[in-house]
View 1 (cartoon, helix red, strand yellow):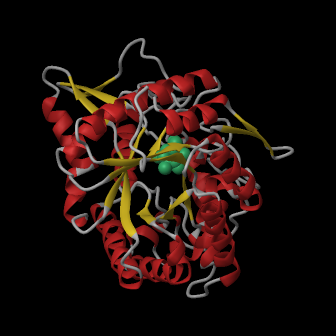
View 2 (cartoon, rainbow, N blue to C red):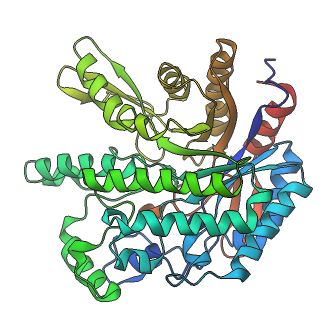
View 3 (cartoon, protein in one colour):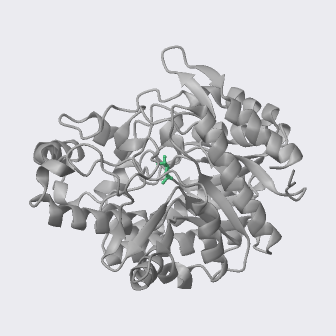
Length: 431
Ligand code: BGC
């Protein structure tokens, strides 16, 4: 057994919109509910984590885990521009106090993809105003709850908008060539997003325009294809929020998270790897100098040949359609370590599968790799598995299963899986 250091954090992660339910003032709620929605289904009650968080955190703690990463929902805290809802702050206060009671270290994400509807009407993630709005929201949360929060991730997967822009462009370039081949599974994008519904898009966009009462071309949600300017806005929002947090409570450790593939080169693929590593991560480094930690999120790898990314024939696939390859985590940590010496937290890593034995195998292989990284001196201080619960996988709905706990959404009854105890055992005795 290889034991992790005593203070090493092990637990699981969720995001408010994916688990809480009834996030009615958010942009996603609208996108899911308009006619011709490209979402497989709406989130509705989700898994009712808003009301059942105690049961869920209790299950995590009982299994032996000591860390919970979750997000605070901006659309709940500030449902209307400038109007902060104390009742919602009190809700998250209860969540944080419960973590404390159970000796579970909370890690709070301030923005995990969903935004208040009003923010999008104001110009969303391509508008300079968002920098100010986001730092005001961060300031409010920390002035109310700061004492209870040791770690804050300002923004989840700050690089996702640019990745989506790249993939969408590639997709559109190919669309006319191989329209029929592209139907069905879209295996390029890591998160649950449908890029193959062009036919429906026009009607959907019109409906969105009506719902937001604006020109749909100007709808800039967090997961919309992002411009370079948008990327700068996201990163400045992070910097300004970090400054606001530190002004109020310098003790809080502040970081941001990135979605990172393990890019591997076949002979001739080295340049392609370098390009993607730069676009995924290295170009963001100038904004991160004053951060306390970096959140690394990894799900798979990409293999590059002289022509760019190639698909392996016969690769073992996850339910999401991309490769099942737990060793990617260690690959990414080694790459990050060559550019970043401050603490790293693995804020997400996991697999969508209906077979929990595959999840256990995934955790074992990924954490073996992580343990080796620590032995080699890489400064990793925690790991939160994605996800605590089976949940709403964005445009792909509830069919995907990333959870350590299954939920019957008719009764909202929880069924902890063997993988949850397995993860807890690793915290107690090692991998
Ligand atoms: C996101 C999660 C998502 C997970 C699995 C991550 O990119 O942060 O919200 O559910 O991937 O696709």
